Structure formats: structure tokens, C-alpha cells
Amino acid sequence: MNAYERLQLQNKAWSEEKTEIDKDYFLRLAKQQSPKFLWIGCSDSRVPANEITGTDPGEIFVHRNIANMVVHTDLNMLSVLQYAVEVLKVEHIIVCGHYGCGGVVAALSNNNFGLINKWLRNIKEVYKMYKSEIDELEDLEAKSNRLVELNVIEQCQDLIKTSIIQKAWNSRNAPHIYGWVYGLDNGLVSELVKIEPDFENINPIFRYDRDQLI
Image (cartoon, rainbow, N blue to C red; front, side):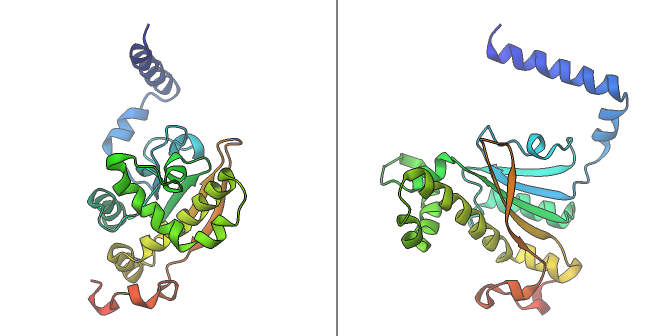
């Protein structure tokens, strides 16, 4: 049996197990989704949102990309954000990075990776902001782990710069923003930052006129 065939069998076993425990599980799930959380995480296969948080399908709306970035020109991410905030009306957004992130390690180097260079440029901009702090660290693991943390914090800041978040804050005082980092070696998350829906938390340069946030 090859790996692909094993996936199909595992899916069947999972479906049967869920139905055995609760015969209406998939019927309820198919009717609607009403998650309270949006998860912006890394594409790394070792960092699955539902597994980490112990939640079921339907509880977390998920967007993943390399190094959990919030890029202001990324229409994919912005579309997910707008749908989650304005249609699903999520109450919380979690940006979750992880130690040992390959994208972050790559951004610390001067290697040419081809097309992905354009994406890594966004992480390099964070590195540039904190270069003196990061370069004081002795080894690559320490440097990359600190950049992982700083990157999460900056992505949370980039979230609150969007009109999508500011509009929601203005109209319903939500969502709350959290920055997490996940440890591959112990399976635990740590909260790095929490941002309440308060316009004072937004750099004035990036604040929109609240009268226009309708």
C-alpha cells in the first residue's frame, strides 16, 4: 500500500469513527460553520491548527502560508480575512508561528531561492527592523527563533493596519488579536502578544478616519 492509498483508508476510518460516536456529526457540520476563531499559520505540515488546539472541524477558520505572513498585497490572505471578519464574524484572530520555521531560516540567509525570494522579502523586512538585536545572538537557531517571535508580533501589527480589522473594531469591538509561537519539540504554544480592539493600539499613521469606516 502506498502513502496515497493509506490516506484514503485513514479518511474512511476517521469518518466511520466520527459517525459511530455521533451519527449526526457530519449532518450538523454540513449545514453551517460558525467558528469564533481565524487562524493565520504557517504552511508547515507539523503545525496543524485543529490538532494543536484540540478543536473539531468547524471551530477554526484557517489560512496558512509560508511563515504565517500578513502581507498587505496578498489578496488571498485579505479575502480570507474579510470573509472571516465580516461574514463569519470571528471574535478572535490568532497568528501562530513556530520555532524551527524554514521560511524564517531562509530569510536570514543570502541564498537565492528563485521565486520564493519575493515572499521571503517580507520576512527580511522584519529582520531588517530588528537586525541589531538578532545579530547579537550567537547561533543560527537562536537567531531564527527570535526572528520567528518578532515576525509574529509584526504580523499582528500588520493585521490592525487593515481597514478590515479597523472597520470591525469600529462597528462591533472585535476581533481580538493574538500572537502565538508553537514549539515543535513540546507541542505547546506561548502567547507573545495580545491586542485589544482599541484604536489607541494602532500607530496613528495607519489609522483610518472612523467616520469613513462604515
